[in-house]
Image 1: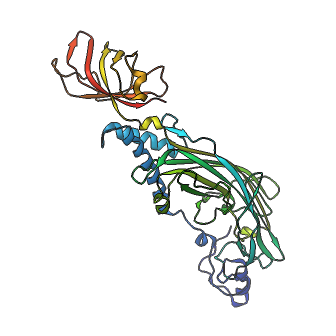
Image 2: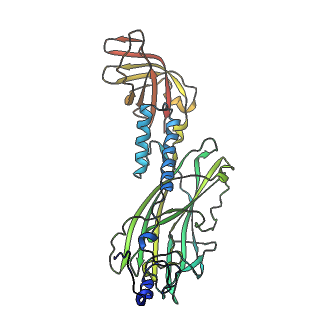
Image 3: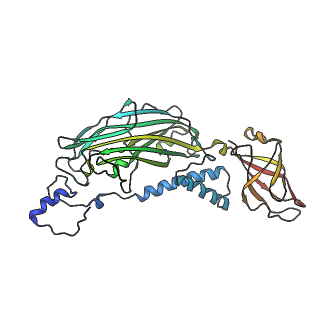
Length: 415
């Protein structure tokens, strides 16, 4: 790769120079404003990145609110940091998130019509025998197979030949209301198989997704609209991975994790109980980047949509009859009758407790006749993912045994 800056090109070579640079207007050989590939390349949109991060942080804050972590407390900050770090590394913790049931999945394909592009934006290595076009994609038709894209050069023009995409329709576990926007997290794992006859470009490793929300039974799983109107574009912004012969053949896996957010128009129809997600390889939109004359992309996608576990949203309290502490661990506990059906599994049960999150430390005992209020989060063995947050004080101390009576327990989860 050669970079040319501040050069004085002799007039007799100006036309040849213009033919090998990205220029406006697009016709090779016509004098215009020369632009290098670096100037033509879009950088990451800071606002978009910040907005996506804030959406995930808000989803984690929603979890903390439902689990009744005290605002601005140390346990809440630790909980939110741990959950957000998991999401940013592509992990969805099943203790707090539940995967939506299998969707209704459809595959659609569309063959566009194309016209010559009179004034395209600059891109690298345009050639008079491989000029750009503008495709128009009609509604698709039902098909089978996997999402794919195909484009090629014919009679001196690069055209999109075909775009195939998947569309999956889900029923939400927790409806989305305007005042209670239960988050929806999407994790898309895409295996891209790319084949070109010239050097690959970043659009070839990019993905398009488009989500839609609606009330119960309102989304048509057979909607054939291409996912090209205001999609979420996951552009590849890194160095192109090396490939094997022929010139470029690559099998590469990408994973995208993002929060799906309904639009204001969709929220006006709340409660929203369905979500559809379409996934497609990014088309070249009539550009033979790097002077490619044949581009074929196949995408095998695996979709996962997650929402907060409903049991984490069943908030309430039950009365703690007594808890026995032997100086090393919480040995057993007795619970009084609970009026909530989801909590009745604890009624009059004696269980062993393991403290997993303590604030303040439970062994920081106050005066013998009572002390400050403490909180501890317990794991209940034998009940997977059952978490209890106990508020308690110390009415008395009897040797190494500490008994807590008539205190309140917040039931966090049991699923």
